[in-house]
Image (cartoon, rainbow, N blue to C red; front, side, top):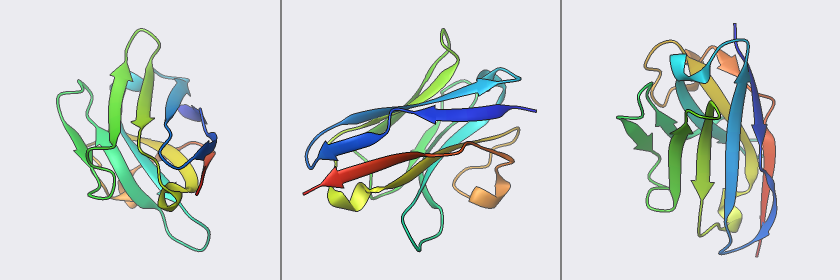
Length: 123
């Protein structure tokens, strides 16, 4: 079993940037397909980005494509989400999730979830 912890959230002005990190304990994160999701108040989990085991394949929601970049740092065993050109619509709790399989953009196919980190973008 793997435990996930997100970090890097905070308050930023529109147009700014944040870098989120997802770290794992229990097992190395490189063994898992990892996705980032976000959830605004009253909404369901929304897919943001995902990355496969070798970082050969990534996927993005249309709403973040060109602004967000998902990557792996194998030296630190983290999966990072670089978020640029943030807008108030990006405000949400951001979660990383892991799966032993190619879970793609479907939250129900991810078995492990972190507690989330708040991202707030002011206008």
